[in-house]
Structures are given as C-alpha cells and as structure tokens.
Image (tube, rainbow over all chains, first blue to last red; front, side, top):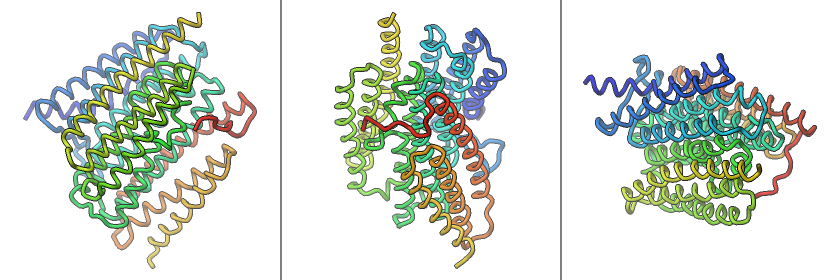
Length: 363
Length: 100
C-alpha cells in the first residue's frame, strides 16, 4: 500500500520537477549554469530511476491528479514502456546536458546561452508528459509542448539555415498535431471517452473510427517523419546544435511513435486489418531504403547521421506492422523495445561524437 | 439537422479550405493564417460533433480551451521565427527544398 503510494506519487514529480528547473533557469539565468543544471539533472534522473524501479516491482502505476475523477481530471499512468522511456530520456538528456556544459559551443550568440536551459528542461517535462499520459488529450498537450520546445531549440543558434529548418519543422509539427486533434475529436464524438483503457473496450470497426484512426496515424507519422513525410527531419536535425540534434533524433521523434504505438495497440488492434498494418510496414521499409540511400549520398557528417535516423525510424514501423499483424506479437514487441532503446542510445552517442569530430577537425 | 451538427459541418468546410490554402501558399504569414483557420475548424468539430444529440458536455469545452491556448502559443512562436527569418534574409518564403 505505502510502496504503491510512493511509486504513484513519483508520477507527477517526473513532470513537475523538470518544469520547475525550466522556470528556475528562466528566471535566474546564470553565466555559469553548471550549479543550476547539475542538481536538476540529478533530481530528474533519480525520479525517473525510482519510477522505473517501482514499475518493475509493482507493475503498472497510476495517479489521478488532485483526485479529480476521469474524464475531467488528468490521469497519469506508468507502464513498462512509459517508465523505460522516462528513464532513457533522463539518462540521454543528462548526457546531452553534460556535453553542452563541458564542450565549447560553436556559436557565441548570447541567446543560445540564455534560452537553452529553459527549453531543455521544458523538453524533458514534455517528453515525460507524453510517456506517462493515460488519455489521448494529455498526449496531445504533451506533444504540443514537445513540438514548441523542440522548435525553439532548433532555432536557438539564430542562423538563417537554422531558422528555415525550425520554420519547416514548426509547420510539419502544427499540421501533424492538428490532424491528430481532429482524429481525437472524432473518437470522442463516437465513444464519449478519451481514456485509452475505456476506448480499447469500446472501439468498433465503423467508418468514423477508421477516419479518426487514419487522421491520427497520418498526423503522428508526419511528426515521426515516416517516409515519405520525412522531408522536414534532416535539416532540423542536421543544422541544430550538437546536443539538440542528439535529443531530437534520440527521443523527440520517438514520442509521436510511442503515442501511435499506444493508440494502435490500445484502440486499433481489433480494427486494423493485417493488410493495413502491412501498409505501414511497407512505408517503414521504404524509409529504410530511402533514408539509407540519402545517407550514403550526403557528404556532411551531421546530415548523414540525420538521414540515418529516417532509416532507423523505418525499422520501428516495420516492427509495429509485425506487432499488429499478430503472428508473433510478443517477439515483435521485444524487437520494438530493443530498437527504441538501442537507437536512442546509439544515435545520441553518434551525434555527440560527430559534433566533437567536427569541432576538433575545424580548429 | 441540429445546430451542433451544423457547427461540425462548418468546421469540416473550414478545415478543408484552410488545408488547401496551407498547401497552396508559400508566403509564411498566409500559411500561419491558414493554420489558425484550420485550428478553428477543428475546435468547431470538436465542440459540435461531441455535443450532437447529447446534453451540453464540459469535456470538449475544456479541450477546446486548452487547444486555443496551444494555438496562441504556437502562433506567437511562429511569428517570432518569421521576424527573425525576415530580418536575417529579407524573404517572406522558405527556400525551395532540394532534398526529397
């Protein structure tokens, strides 16, 4: 009882604590931010590790904010996927933050110094909000917060090519989340609920559900940069600051993918026919080929790595197709989780390493 | 036809028209306006369709309020980015994409 209470009370903390550090970094900007950032990172990692530990011991944790009942209240839910992604986020986020603290930055703009840390912690809070959301609308809010802070981080250097990439990213993000919101509106109109758990029991294969799922899938695929909707990703990931590229490639694109995965598994699994699932898988296969080919053709190191992200995201969709086709769902789920975690670790390490390589080879 | 369904239909028309405008125009401000109209249409659908043949429902209204806040925040961010882009390059459109 008490252990479950402690575990569940970590859920809101995982979102609130990064937000608090974002506000602190905003109102008390430091010329030397180390002493502000390090405690933030330590508290963030500690909470996420605690959440992961409690989830692995006790199973799924839920917390209803302010004890307001659903659907008006906001419920948070940590399952294996959510708490693993939260822990992964805090670890990779900390690595990127340490990189940012201890390597000289390649732009001297004071704006980059001033706004990086608020946006960084905001990004962390938004990611945790997406991982731990229990209903479709909180996912939407988390996704929007994520999109806004990610666009801010891309634009932070203030160079013209970064601004163009940020604008293109912003338009893709806005269009994607509007399509998602439209789908959510249709689902609510059809079933009168937004909680994933109750939608899973209610969903029936009728026209409005198909239209809603199609809109949600299209919007989230645009935000995950699934081929052929990926054109915004390479410039956004290629021109931003090195730690930002690492965060975006390793974690931010995964947020909309995990949302799609939750919706497909929760609501769509009885509705999506194997051929529709295979269609998504075919797009994923196209992404693997096209992203790999584009990566081969690019000479600039960070653009090459960014195109490899497009290819690696394709593997996630192939895995999701296998999961939904239903011949070996457990194996497919294991493979998906492995790819999520492995790509996040490998791609963040790769971006950080290539940033160091570029910085040392120029001097 | 109930008034709520009428709202939802108007919302569908707004979303479709604004999506066409979003795709057709390259001027950044026009695209942002199209996005705002699309958002309004989306909110009309959300409120209208959900309350169709039901009692007034606080949840879609709460959702639309949240959605409006999000739309205002994104519009503000987009406007700031436009101004910086215009100041840096003097252009009102994005350069053509060279990478498919």
